[in-house]
Length: 193
Image (cartoon, rainbow, N blue to C red; front, side, top):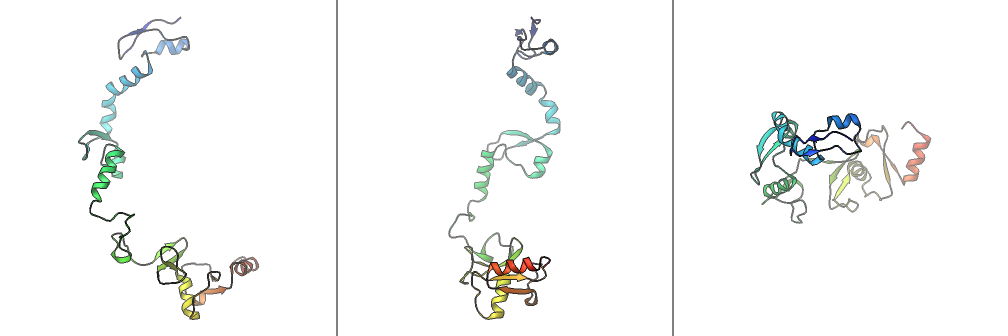
């Protein structure tokens, strides 16, 4: 049996249980895990707060501590709950992403201008195009090939970039295939192109 000890946190006498090894029983300082955790938070919080930054939550006025990297990342509230309240307060009167009356294109508050990227391709807003995607965009190289041919491309037709650069949409760099299998056959016969 191990010697009786006094808990550093609650000052109760305790005997380390039979599961303790002799070495571990000699170093035991607390009667329970919760006493150990409470002691560490009560007496060693000063060590933690020397490096941490003291802040006041703008939502609930609670004092909380954050690490310097959290402040650099922009942490302003004490919890996720307060962060959600702050976000909803910041967006009052502005358009929310799920709003059906959200302005489109240049009138949108997040508009950055110009074409958007679709993977390795540029796409342009053309909601009147018969083969646009759900958002109303058409890929640039298809628009150029349609202007050259004077007709809309069929959905199964594939436009190939001869030099492999998908942002090089010059007409001399584009080649039209009637379907995806013809395009794949071309790549199998010419693997470097």
